[in-house]
Length: 385
Image 1 (cartoon, rainbow, N blue to C red):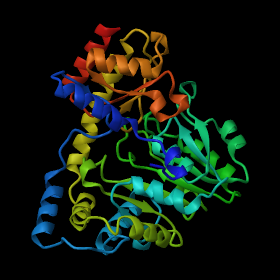
Image 2 (image 1 turned 45 degrees about the vertical axis):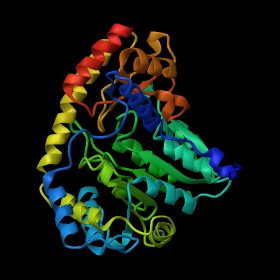
Image 3 (image 1 turned 180 degrees about the vertical axis):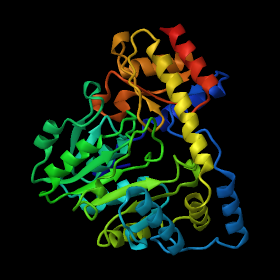
């Protein structure tokens, strides 16, 4: 078959490829420790599940508004206003099946051939994939360990041109787990204030932060509320990955455009899921506190464990649930070592290059797994190396 040219520009999310390989090995009887997928291993809190059950029983099984039901958009706008300290209304919200469609639709809506998009590298692979797909020019913003995986402001200043139409920020970041300091976001805003461009602020991990770290939203800075699209969702915070529930918060000129893309692609987000999301935001948050505390416990254990492996050097993440150690001391490339650990140690992780060229020399481990499995994984890696 002959496919459209854009198909050949699409990338992928390697976590799902590695998951498939790991499952194939498990089918052969091999024991695999899964540290590759960015998915909380907790069950969705009971109050959220109960809300979904009530919704099904009430007959909420039909089409609904493409932008999202009014109640969920109000719950989201109230939540984002409260947590970011910036006033938003339901008209600013578009509900989508997962948060990825916000990346997809925003880039489709704003970027044309030749437009430049600055994005974090190493960073979530779908950013670069979608920029390339629509014919934009992907401009990587290197995140280096010597700079604590944060933005080099002098370097960023040189990247911004009159062709820059979108800047993507992710804090806490995937795969590095680092938060961009408030001072650096303010400096980025100063550079961008007179430029004709938008900001896509991926804040999906904003609730999962440790040791007083702050997920600072650029929307708090004067002049940036209407220029920023906040991407957030329910998958990570509420262990709802399979529910497919995300949203974007944006100005009222862009929201109808993103809604039109929803109409053409998904029609609407599952009604039952939307009702569950209302309960997630408005109901008790005790389980979220417990989940973050457990991630924090695992974070300390995996960082200490990785740093005890010869050739590994792991910084401590500020948020999310990923450790991103340098493995240059082992003598292996990222891909070589990721494959070796999967096939010889039964430990599934991701090569740093899954997140862009600047990820070479690193591996990403998700600590969304039990302490017992994390300790066993460290033991197995040591035995192989």
